[in-house]
Amino acid sequence: MKNDVTEKFLAKLLGFTGAFTTIFLISGSVTDPVNAPKMVSIGVLGSAAIATVLTTELRGRLMEYKLLLGFVISFLLMMVISTTLTQAPLTQILYGAYGRNNGFLTYFFLVLCLLSALSLNSLKSCGSIAGSLLIAGAINLAYGMWVILFGDFVGWDNPYKSILGTFGNPNFIGAFLGIIFSAIIALLVDKRSKKQVRFLSLALLPICGYEILNTNAIQGRAVAAFGTTIVIFLYLRSKFSKWIVVAYSTVSFVAGSIALAGALQVGPLTELVYKTSVSLRGQYWLAGWNTGQSHPLSGVGMDTFGDWYRRMRDPRALELPGVNTVVNAAHNVPIDIFAFGGWPLFVSYLLIMLYSGLSMIKVIRRKKDFDVTFAILASGWAGYQLQSIISINQIGLAVWGWLLSGTIIAYERIDRNGHTEISSNIKLELKSKLKSKTHDSLPAQVPIYAALGGIVGLLIALPPLTADVKWRSSMVARTLPALEDTMNDSYFNPPNNMKFLKNIQTLEQSNLNELSRKYALEAVKWNPDAFDSWKVLYLIRNSTPDEKALALKNMKRLDPLNPDVTSTK
Image (cartoon, rainbow, N blue to C red; front, side, top):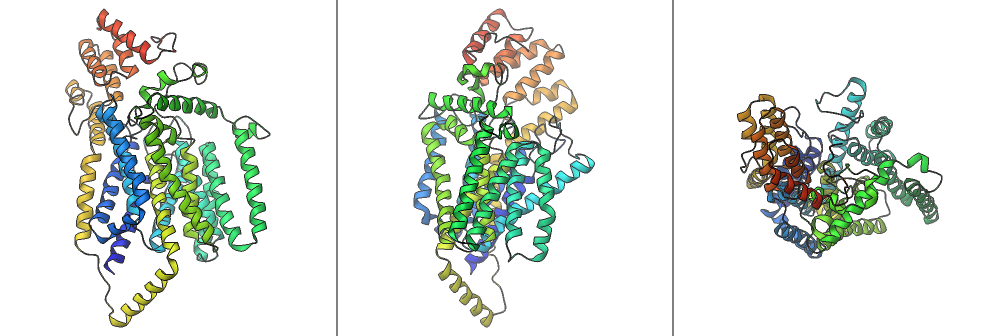
């Protein structure tokens, strides 16, 4: 029984991990209100969750997945090898690029979430994860409607002129609301849901649809349609003959193919679903693929694609998206991972996700009844996978991709052993009620170990956030000592390329030319593959002729297709 109590604690902790990471942001005291805070959240809570598993008997359940553990260990090992072999700065590898934070540590924490979820051993625990997803969705729906009606109370720059949710970007909130839309559909068609829940779902569905449209993000509509298709498939399969299901699946496949063709500028739906961003993404994907192919066994290092985009882009990219348009993500998570770690990391990632996908298929083949928990988990997982191949690995979305992967794998095991497990649980519960009215309490050491794990995670994940807080404080103080203090490299104040560039610009505009030169030289020393750092060194007033010549040489090395690397347009 103590295992059951510990598992309930773990399920609540994992659910909180997903929901809190999704909604957590910091406004005012940082320059990046979204990504660094979310990295801290997943670091603290993911570490607390794995500490709970490893310090209790729940760890024994992990050994039931030897093949999956092999894939996970391979993934982690290849990240280590990539980190060892890359020439990129270690702090950039660990924490990721500024404004992304998709470095080694973020992926490590995502793995911890997946591994922790494998220890779930009841459908109720899986339901807690699904419920937490809905809670995070409800909070974002309320926030989005407030923004639409009254304006945004978060003081961030919003060039998109649409709702951003707790993700800071309309594409990400659009994709997340697409996942929530399909989850609401699952609640609506589930006749075992309480009337109050179905009534609330009926009220929230049009609000969710309206907010998805308000994001102007095609991926939000695509994720909503894809997830809803899966939910309806599961529902029809539980109610009707296989011929109805086959007909529905055929129609859905044809409709999806036509929509996909339209997105690729083929067929009747081109004007409806095509956006220029689709063509842009094609160039980003190609550059990411070229990057991975250039280092097939080790990749170029975690979250360093931005340093390689110019070198690896196709000549056609000079026209669209343009010679001076650059990105630091391939807008496709698997291709990003291929660029980061080459074929070994890429294959390991695909095998982990394939394992989860096959677990989902096993449940679908075995389970005839409609289970709203599984419908939410499956549609959410599929929605994340779709988003991951057309967009960026935003931490608030990625936490669900990995958490749902682990939960679906656990669900498959629970469902496979369901009859014996349910019978056993009923007997134990009746026996407990007859013998005693007391309830087992959570062992005191469990929350202690979880807290210790969370503290370790906090110390590991905190540096990018503390550095950003210091940087923002220097902007408010507007003094030279405060600015220079942000440039003093330390554990809780790691450097990043954006901070170098902005501070050098500030010094140059303040006519502190020798100081701007000093830090420009430090920037190129810190990361010799950062094109923008060399360009700043070339443009600042106090650079020597030799330094300008060296900068020009490196700009041409890093951007070989650009006919004019010195252009400021």
